Image (cartoon, rainbow, N blue to C red; front, side):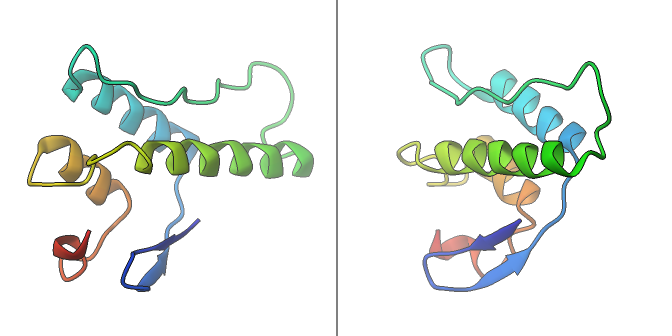
Length: 100
């Protein structure tokens, strides 16, 4: 996944589904009860996780999840635990964090 900051800095990250699941679980714990979070795509129960069609579909679903998450107003504002959790997940360089 390519991450791009508003200042046009970009970097590539590679994450497994289990890492997205852990991120989502942590955000649920940190979020206020009334805070909406996008739904994380479900786990695959049957079939191969290495099937090319499945991999492309899963990548698309996880990219959509991240876009929806980052569209939440002010989710990265301030020095909140939620903002830190997301920026750590995205491997956001310290030099870029103040620009977000």
